[in-house]
Length: 200
Image (cartoon, rainbow, N blue to C red):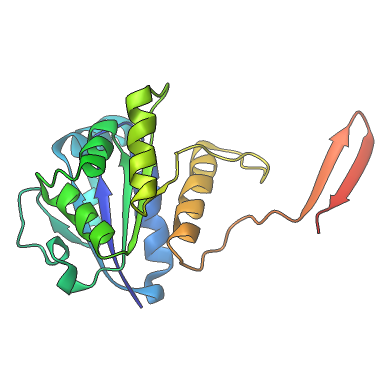
């Protein structure tokens, strides 16, 4: 049974946050608490990109960014995992620099100092050298950078199923058991010729 923090920063990619919420509901027996902190821009992007404000309809514990009384602002609350999805480059930079100027960055700082699991899902392109160095810093501190880059070999047919390949990978990295496409027996079809490769 797990306690997880979900941070949603102000970059584009609200579909990833929505699907993360949906997937967490599907695996509800695997966690006891989900704490959520969203930036103001994250809420605006959700409205713009998804056309609703349904983020508040999920049965999670929502906290404002200036609420340092939230349990996961301290390591003693023992939240074992934090996912920032999507993660803006500004948020990533503040986490890399150890600047705990709001609840989201403070929670990430706590997870790193307690040697727990931090997963950042940046959605940005192209990347500057500053971005890459910040990602290196977070990685060296023990965090995991999981860019919001979908996979296509599973045969996803629509936008949500394509985006879900990222969310499934994030939940795998977080240590949850999820039903997802697994690489194994791969089939290719070229001009009527069919080739099957069994990966060992």
